Length: 111
Image (cartoon, rainbow, N blue to C red; front, side, top):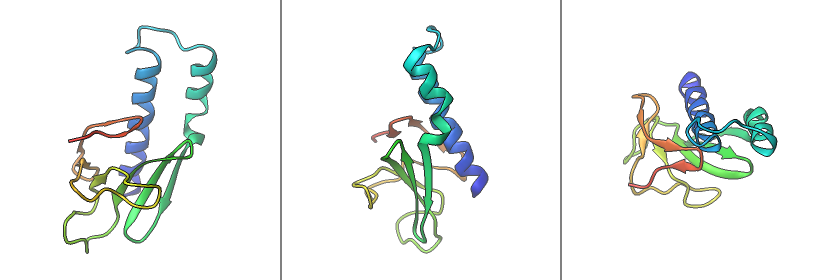
């Protein structure tokens, strides 16, 4: 699952670059160029027994289910953050193992 987490992190960074460059129409300079250059350092992954927490610049980006023993979700499901230490358990926003997800650099999309 490490490869899928790394792919998710790449997708988060790619969306930030798209946003910062206004869809590729604007050259990245100054603040945004510096942010993009250091973006990998801003993303942190904390693995727990139930969830993998993705942190973006000190804020929780979202969670990924890290167990097959969840009654509601499958391993790899992406969940929005309900708070710093807990995911929103209303619905999955995609699955990193299936590759089917829609995200932004700010977090998983609302339903």
